[in-house]
Amino acid sequence: MILVEVRKDRIVVSGHAQYEASGKDIVCAGVTALVTTLIDSILGLTCDKIQYEIMPGWADIHFGDLSEESKLLVDSFFLGVCNIANEFPDHVRIM
Image (tube, rainbow, N blue to C red; front, top):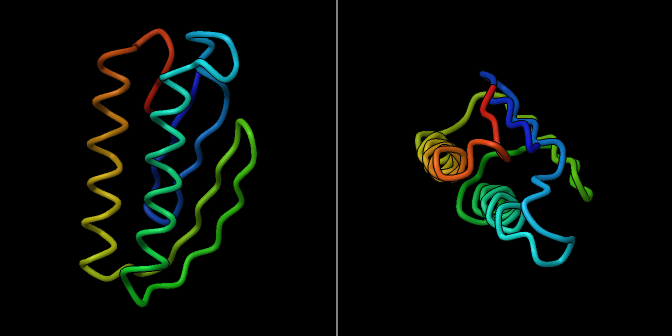
C-alpha cells in the first residue's frame, strides 16, 4: 500500500502499491511520476526552494511558504494522486 501524507509544509509518500510485479506496477509508476513531476516543476518553474529526499518506496518533500504557482502545482499533484487512490483504493491511501 502506498501511503500519501499531505501536510501544510510537507508531503510524504511511502510504501509500494503491490498492484503488479516490480517494474510492471502501473500504480507505483503513476504515483512516482506525479511525485517527480511535482519536485521538478517547483524547482524548474518557480523560484521557491524545497528540500526533498526520494528513493524507491519513499519520497519526503519539505517546503515553507509557497508561491501561488507552487500551491497550484501541489494542488495538481493532490488531484492526480486522489484520482489514482480512487481508482485503486486497495493500493493507495491518502492520509
